[in-house]
Length: 219
Length: 253
Image (cartoon, rainbow over all chains, first blue to last red):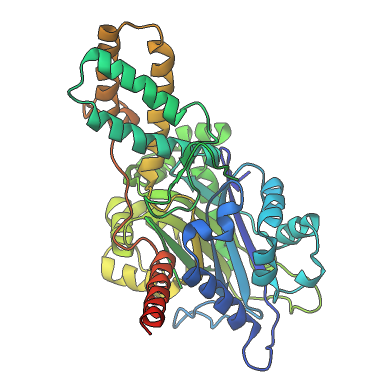
């Protein structure tokens, strides 16, 4: 399957936006304005996408039209604007989309509300079917990262950060102290436990990045 | 608009291809995708000369090591989604190649790395796209990318403080650490210290040419936000500062 690179999945959906306006602004502009407002008012860890399991990275943009390449190219154009949704995710597409509906339904309703045919989407199953109808198949997918579940990636990043701190702080310790402190480090960081402590999905600040042992994390 | 989510930069490039060219470009992309039959075919074509060594053309992408994920999607005129009578059916003159990349670094670093690192591969990937100027010289190539790039309106990364290399190296660190925890459980203090130092040495990376690319790469280091973490975070901080100043004015009154 060209949409997949190992367990990583590249989802591309071109969702047609209705032609028309709300008497002040075109539906395409309203969609764009909502997306930009979402970007400008919420930190990454507060993004609705941070609660959607297994989202590595994702983006939305409005494609108004294609560009003219100049003579001798033909002047080409699209008949509808499109909401383009591009996600890099782990695992199965349908499970991912169901999880997205479950965790981010209010955002989905706002983002897609001006898209053709979205009015009849009222359940997770409808949403999956809708995105599948809008999906275009990847021709070549390149994975320059890993295809592990997001929880494992975040746990590994947490451990890298914590173990680096531990190593720098332990350079001149006696063998006995080193062994004792390493055991405390393992008890605190729980390297086998991917759930916690770990890194918070979407966190862009060292002060907020660690999910402690008492908190639960969705992704 | 935002093309930045921490250390990740989103690029969207949409370029036209002549309809008759699509099947040939799809074959070229197929040859670049690793799989057993394709590996066999690549083994065969490689013997025809470097020009036909299709798989090697992507090697530079791996060496560049600044990409999280990237994809090429060729959309034929009849493949634009059509969801009913409310939407006019598309009938563009060209097929379109959609390129989406998530990379680390700035736009210029990325575009120039491609152009300098894999110029031939780049010309192959955009083979006969309408208006494609070739990847060298860089001036016309930059102009072409700028002209066809579409800005992202919302971009999210699950790990804004991590680069693609951090994700890969942290996986290796966790695996080695888990192995060390199991191995060291019954060790005495002196043996533990010796093995711990071996672990650190291995995780610091080894530039020896006999080591694999993974083993050469250092796995220890501290991640931190980039100077501008993301447009979103900057906006949130600005809003918080504004709210605080308004509250302070009210308190003073």
